[in-house]
Image (cartoon, rainbow, N blue to C red; front, side, top):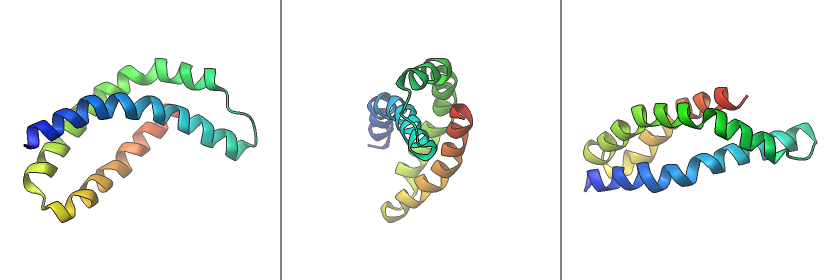
Length: 97
């Protein structure tokens, strides 16, 4: 069961999450800067950084998720994911800034 959950998360989840993240980051940056979003800039950042982000993601999240689904009690899984996600989002921000 844990392997199936990790597989779904690392395939469908990744394909939906990363492009959305890059465009949402551009939108939020535009709102804070009081300017219109530049979607071509988001597309450029996505194409330049997607490979390295995917590579790093596949080095971290499969193991975290497998251990989370296999060893962590169900009521603590969200907390575990969120703790790792804080550091993961900091890494993503360094790729987008």
